[in-house]
Image (cartoon, rainbow, N blue to C red; front, top):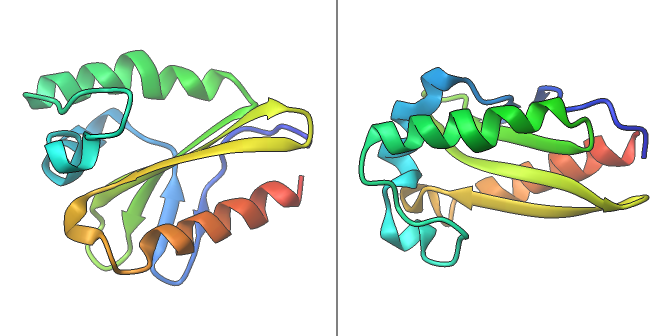
Length: 126
């Protein structure tokens, strides 16, 4: 896999793009503050939007400096809301580990399969 970093991907309903600090409000409202969503993740629900901003500053945004770590905000085209995230991290050559999170309000709509297929297709082109 030739690493070129996170590039924007579009599907019929989604825009997968790099996170921005201004995404904190959507993230907090849609998933980082939800116990149901974060139950099996490595981090606890955020108690305030400041927790989400700090998470963006400390964890999410610095990852873009590493070209073998791909991290996308999942944005719904219909309303421009950041509703989740999908990551692909190259663990070994020619293979990647996928991880994702999606706000529970958006479960059951086929969003993650759509995002996963787009990411997989994009990474296989490299």
